[in-house]
Image (cartoon, rainbow, N blue to C red; front, side):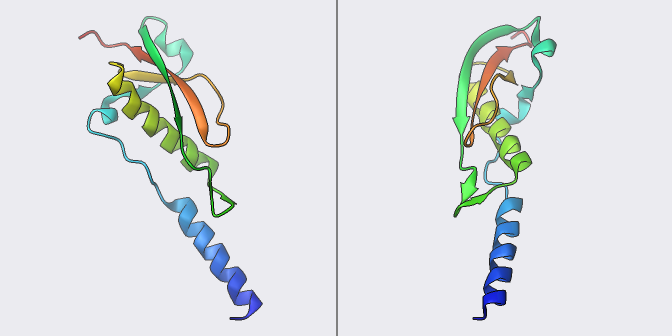
Length: 108
């Protein structure tokens, strides 16, 4: 294979990988909201969760927005286990890892 062909194959592979969504919400996780700290002032904090995923695949950085979206889904799924219905990011994304506060905003 010519050098130029190898480069194009790498570019196409990276583009396809960056477009993939690897994380899916659970049925309960779909109901959990991602809000800001200002929006949860009347909610009860029930805990916190730290979620992580691969931010690089084969040494190639994944799309930062895709990584954030997938971290949000993981946090939403995790919130259900803590009895929460809302998550708020409380840290920045670092190496594919982020911490979220978990709240219950809707009375049971």
